[in-house]
Every structure is written in structure tokens, then in C-alpha cells.
Image 1: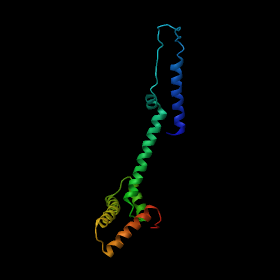
Image 2: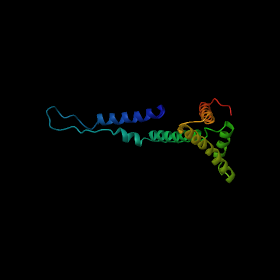
Image 3: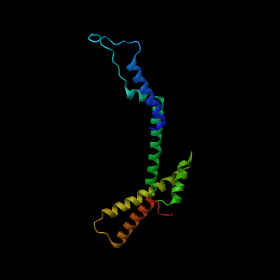
Image 4: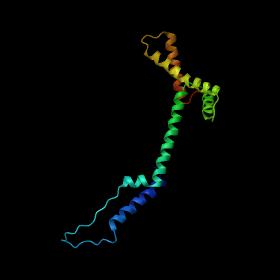
Length: 154
């Protein structure tokens, strides 16, 4: 939770605790008296749930989580693509009403990474690799690592 939204919520909680503790209309019973003082408590969880600042902060956090999750998914789906292809895919995904050709291109670009990842998995599971297969596995691993860490220039 951001500091700017936490401070008003904390102040509200402190005010509630203070009001419950002071209770100006209640006088303390004399010592030895059987009369009990009314007790109260503050449900901090309820205060945080009902506070507008806390609700706004939770909504902002959820929105940020969804945005970052979609960016991470897109990065994983486009790992084997060049920067130009990644840019093209991002532009296609941002279109409000993509055409059928745009949708086909999106599916093609997204599928390319999955296909290369499957090829890499198959080669990794194979017990005896030929020299060509070993070279291809190394290429797939190297290209994926370089793209993952931003060292490949397209």
C-alpha cells in the first residue's frame, strides 16, 4: 500500500481507538464497585476494508498486477521472436478491431515461440544426440538466453 493512502487510514484507526478508550459520557466506577465499564474494540480489518483510500489502493494494486502479468505472458510468448517481430505483435495486440489477417499474424507470431520451445524440450529429452541435434539444442538454448537478457539485437 502506498504511503500516501496508508497515513489517512492509520489516522482513522487511531481516532477510532482513541474515541473508544476515552468515551466522555462514561465515568469510572469507584474502586470496589461491581459496576463494569463498557468495553469495545476496533476491527482494524473492517476499518481497512471500508476506508475509501484502502479500497482505491487495493484496486490500483490489482490493476498493476494484471498489467504486469499480461506483460510477462507476452514476453514468454514472444521469447523466440526478433525485436521487430515483438514490436509488430505488440502493435497488432493494441489494435481496437484487428482484421482476420491481423489475427492470423498474431497467432503465427505467438505460435513460433511455442514451437521452438517444444523443439528444445524434445532435444533435451533425447538420450543420444547427433552432432547436428546437439548444435541445434545449443543454438536454441543460446538464442533463448540472449533474448531473455536483452543481448540480441534483432
